[in-house]
Image 1 (tube, rainbow, N blue to C red):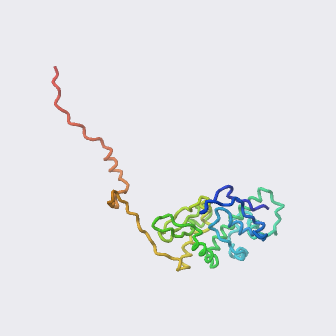
Image 2: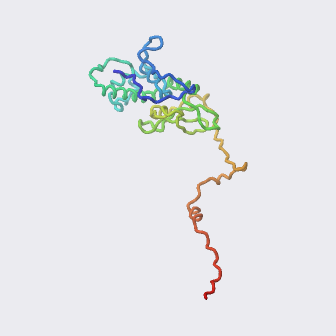
Image 3: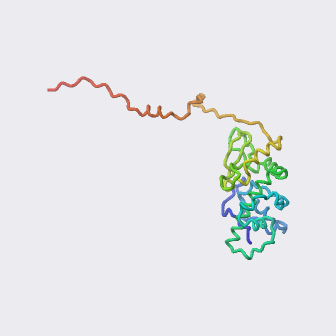
Length: 253
């Protein structure tokens, strides 16, 4: 089965250098001819920069995969794909079925990933990515490019895409790059970001909710100045002005 096709198609990755090789990473051989695992290949795809490589020992432990068999179609094939196993023959699958298996493998890996990153080993790996700024920075000016963490609004797949959580302002933001923003938020879950900061106190930072103060000609505006106008006030503003006072009637001849 050829499961090395980039599922993101021709989406372009915007890099800080402004240029990037268009050649897809090979999963059959590394730079020195070494075989590249499916997991390494998947994490190297455009849009998958937030993912970490799940240890194969974690994937092979049935306890860690409890309940996933009912959530993912072609489960056994998908699991063998992730582990680069050839125990199941692919010759019996049609080309369409092979594509379905590949999609199932990506979904299964995402669900396994959500469990791995709240394990002791997974937290350590993601903590390093966080310190390196691999997840992006907060776009809010007052946060001074604070590193963010990926978070899911739901633990159930197909509910919401991944968002970025800023520990400084505690706000949620869309990922900077479009291809990263299409990743399912369930692959990171609603627990990970906050559990990481609970586990590693040294990564916690003081909260900064410094508000921006609007000014007009140098004068601060009152906090109520820019609030929406009540409907009653809008209606009063639309009222017709009083008619002009009429003069005395003209004498008729």
